[in-house]
Image (cartoon, rainbow, N blue to C red; front, side):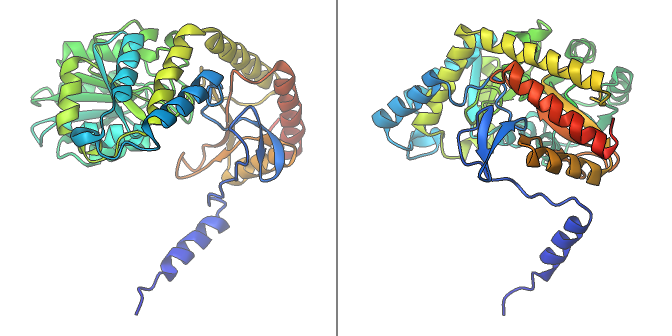
Length: 392
């Protein structure tokens, strides 16, 4: 007799009743600023494709050329027989761009966190100190360790210092923070974190998935604060501003060698396809050679945030191209998203459990590929729906 799975249906029905169930839309075109979703043309405000590199001709052509040369896959994990020269070239390009000794590419940003964090500590003699709003992949990576754990209030440096002093006797101390926080769009005070880490002889790991291609001229939050060489682990993702797929860690040669030999999510995962590896290398080269993409992203970001605030919307504490439209109630956020989609704007609702129950919002993510006319249309539609729902 098959196992009874009615509890799954009951749990899902509860989410539907509470307005918390995910119903992902179907994308029927390339993920561009103007795309096709569920058979309708939409202005895309829910993509991580900040620099619009997903369809950049150089990135696409690199994928095609590498696939023709190497085939569709590598045929192995990298530790055995799956490391291609194009993988090493992609890592070398990334390390040089970031101004560090070395880099190692993972299958995803998630696997970088859950695979690397457990290798940086050993047991109860060690301590991990984490920002309370860190990404779920960091939380999962920490849960896989046996280290002591402390959580400090979001971006609260006094709280971090207290945790460091309380854990002074720990053998290894590891501070972990997001660079750009993906729900609120604010950034970590990494300069202050590094200063405290140096005073207390702690390692620092920053997950900069939403900062790469955005901050520091595109090099990320470490470059933004001019901290190259002072951060133990700089983690990131090719699937955000770089428009491709995959995760990455960057830092010293010692870090790369350590991760390559001890990180199970790297050792036991099939390597990136040749096409993806070539696209990773090409995306960094485009970012390096065409800084106007980053400049346009920030021009669009500042214009949109300024105009939304002028209309009376609450954009929270955002200082980056992630601009949340705070709604509070989950159903209000769901309704705002639904009405925007009906008017041709794709902006997804973010509700519990991804954020606190009273912190629901529609999260917008600005792209360098959007024109001023696109943004003005979005602003007009937000004003219409915002007044209908009583948000402004």
